[in-house]
Each structure stands twice: as C-alpha cells, then as structure tokens.
Image (cartoon, rainbow, N blue to C red; front, side):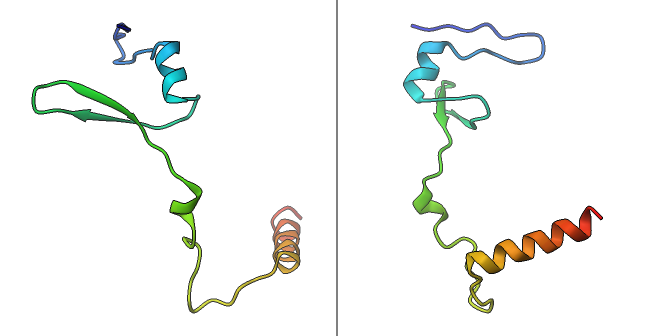
Length: 82
C-alpha cells in the first residue's frame, strides 16, 4: 500500500509507483471521486484524439487550407508585433 502525507497547504505527492501505473505526468489533470463510504478514487482525466474530432468544425464557416492558414497567421503576427 502506498501512502502520502498532506501538507499544511493541502497538497500531497502521489507516489512514483502510482504515477507510473496511471501514466501521470506533470500538468496532467486528476479527478477525485468521493464514494458513499467516504473513500476517494483517484482517476486521471484523459482526452482521446477521437473525443476532439470535429470540435472546431462550424457548418457556416468555409474550410481553410493550410497554406491560407499560414498566410493569415503571418499577417496577424506582422500586425501585432510591428
């Protein structure tokens, strides 16, 4: 069994073996689920590429090709930093 100590700021360090098992890295989000019997489940919050598919699509907006997007970004950078 792995243990951690709660700091005065309410922080804990997740033991390395647990981080490795859950494939957690710095900056990852973690969900704490409180069960009916006051136990806590620790669950990594993950997003799959498939979950994001189509999130930028807008039916009323025409598609932009990569070359056009690059040109628009260059123009924006020129105007913002000149």
